[in-house]
Image: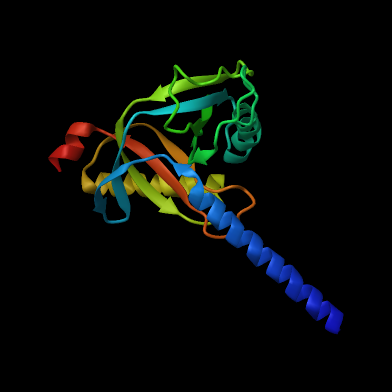
Amino acid sequence: MKRILISSVVIVGIFLVFQIYTALATGKTETQPYTIIRLEVGFEIRYYPAATLAMVTSKARSYKELGGSGFGKLAGYIFGGNKENKQIAMTSPVHMEINDSVSTMAFVLPAEFNAHNLPIPGDSSIAIRTAAPEYVAAVQFGGFASDQNISDHVVLLEEMLRKRGLKHHGNFRFLGYNPPYQPFGRRNEVIVTLIKEEVLQH
């Protein structure tokens, strides 16, 4: 009995140390910069400057399917799967746009890189894109993401924007900030592009 108790304490201790390490490591990860323009009831309005992305396109129609097919390719690229065998630091968040026809998954690349100085991907299915500056509405939620809670927050954000009289365009996107092995302190977001003139007029 005593041995079982000691073993349990050791396992819990290792687990907590691992979680603390994960939280610290995540805190050191470069995060895509943005400016909060204003806080609304239930959501934020942000401005994102231009960013360089490594992107894969997929016929996946679900969060799980897109994550499974896209993450490995993008991780392979930044971990040396490129023409220079160069490692690129991981950043957050991971961008996912999930649709019934064509979906995309993208890593935001560190600020030191742009489309002209990045190593060429060894996998031709990976495209380097420059995302234009934009104003977005963002709603945040915790826990592990799923198709259901992503869909729920798309509906929620759309309704809040309608009530606020703010028009959006383009598809809603999911942003994931944490590695899959981090069970606590998870951050997820759903965002959509807003019309610049409307944001500045409100």
